[in-house]
Length: 109
Image 1 (cartoon, rainbow, N blue to C red):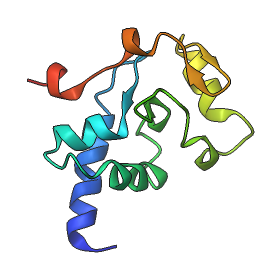
Image 2: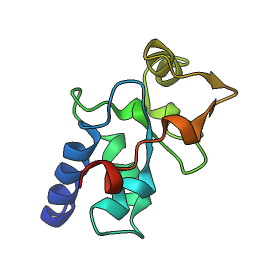
Image 3: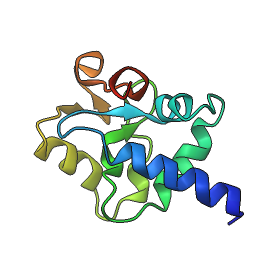
Image 4: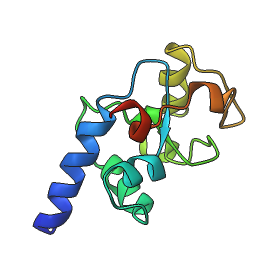
């Protein structure tokens, strides 16, 4: 991994660690907060290889879909982790997405 990507990944992890229990954010929201609005995919790559202390299950796509679930071990681990936090998921779609969405640009002023 290039050093600049490693630094970006660390920043992604720092933001992801701040997502409150029972809330979710999107790859794009993290990218925008970090000043790299067009780098949502890079945030996704960071989440694919994140340390165990990063709550990766709380990062979903802009529509509230569990697009990263295949990177979790187990059949429905991402969904199970979210449901353990009280997040309702139906057919890989977070319910009440707008209500539980956590926007780092607004929350981390």
